[in-house]
Amino acid sequence: MKLICIGRNYTDHINELENEKPTDPVVFLKPDTSILLKKQPFFIPDFSNDVHHEVEMLVKINKVGKHIAKKFAHKYYDDIGLGIDFTARDLQAQLKAKGLPWEKAKAFDGAAVIGEWLNKKNFDDLNNLNFSLLKNDELVQKGNTSLMLWKIDEIIEYVSKYFTLKIGDIIFTGTPAGVGKVFANDRLKGFIEDKQLFSITVK
Image (cartoon, rainbow, N blue to C red; front, side, top):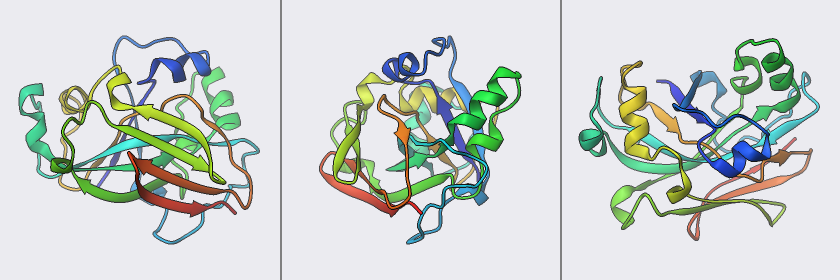
């Protein structure tokens, strides 16, 4: 099981971090060891002084596929969810400056929050879904899947050119603007529309 993450998929977040708008999806991976265990707090790692939250819509793959055409991509998932791609922003900046991979900043233990799953049949339009993150009950991130540069089915088509998708694989589809530093004792809650899908404490 692997976590496939899409970076720079919302224009406002690209502008927020002063990144260049990509011509193709930015793809990176997280190992299964990065998944934060259920009911466990997120511990800020000792190698970073600037860990950011990045709330993202998730998709769980339900069958094996390779070179999946966009028109068939909807057959490869039933469930959507919400999660956090925790990022050690200071470490990421150092790695980017040297032209090195991001994994140490993105794929460390506990860096991937995965909330509850919802059947996609519960929603009329997956390309027009609101999602949000509250930090200490204050809204800090709000997005809508209509603002994705690459929609879910396009992402599946693209990544399946390079990686065989397997049952249980999870795709993180990118984060909107509003990312920010987390501190000890913060409480983070994630929502799709008005349904809460996770709640975690930072230590």
